[in-house]
Length: 479
Image (tube, rainbow, N blue to C red; front, top):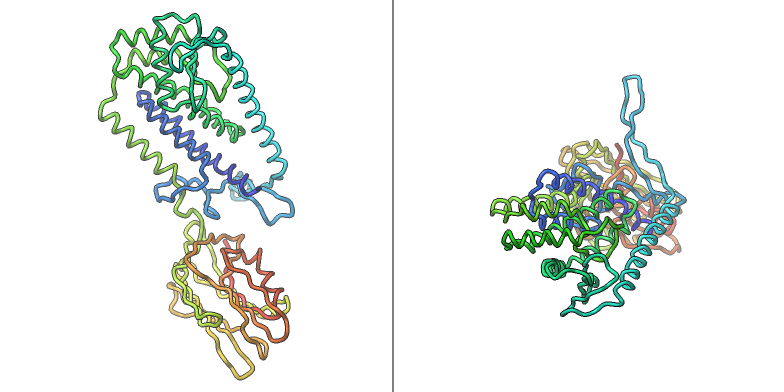
């Protein structure tokens, strides 16, 4: 639950960057076809609601985001603390002898309290939407059918579309006949474009991300651009006289500004002056303008809808070979430690009855990209067995070796090792369990769990305490 909430916060932070870009594009390309602006707002919606996306080298989040556990992380859930806490890292200037230095701070925030505030705000938003919808339904309860799904109503100030599955168009009873055809064409276009569904989705996302001021700005601009796009589609093939009649109807049906609601989609609710100016000056976009708009949309999608390839350090298993329940075992591991200067160490340890009796660190040379890990069994005599852990790297011709000597008369019960291709974040706060072999030299039982990208620091104790004897190989990283 806490992890999902932190994921929501990170999605909102990543979306804020995209919202800023879309707002900037609206200012730069004022004559941008409005239907393509709606596509850009769709990209924002995808970022706000979809935690999973493709990875790309073009992603801007390669440079403005931290990638951990397969997702972007600006805020991190600290699972190691006694109480559920979220870490919010930020840099602040601190005075030193050599001048001000940027220092990383990671204050903790108590997650249950934050989640209660968020849930309260979301409930208020949804309650407001429900009350607003009920008020509109009450006003339209007494209406007269005109034709098809069009109704006249005495208690509404402006035409609008209401409903999702079977949307209806409501017109004020005192509307002049000359205004009706432009208004009906506009509202029918809203229905054909599925704008009531879009507006509802936008409001639901606003209710979830109500704490983000940029999402509020995005929702307001989206509603405005939706109206502009609808206007453009209606007047696309109109003669100048038709555009003038459409503008007069828009001016006559304009209403004062309203609060943000999930419904309805109204004819004269947004930026009437700008819409009339756009209608009278409208020209069909040229092929070049459409091509440029498509290129911009594709570029934004490639750069902002994709996650980084890997922004952090990581290790990836390339291949693995194992003779079941008994070495030799071999694993080909690829390291990527270009983000920050990382010292990687492979640890070979023997644990007996919950106590580490042998620990041999094998420091991997910096700059290493590929590691070959081998575990070999060596029989010293009838009663004594040793396991040799050998590490070969592409940065050194010499092998790193560690020999772990088992107690007398030990025999292998089971083994825990790599299986299948895996990519694991290799960060200074994680210790990665590479392999484990569990032995018994008495009557103790044993316990084995499957390996699935487990942190050794979090789960290693289960191997250490569940048997009399265990050989454990794990990897750590340090700045």
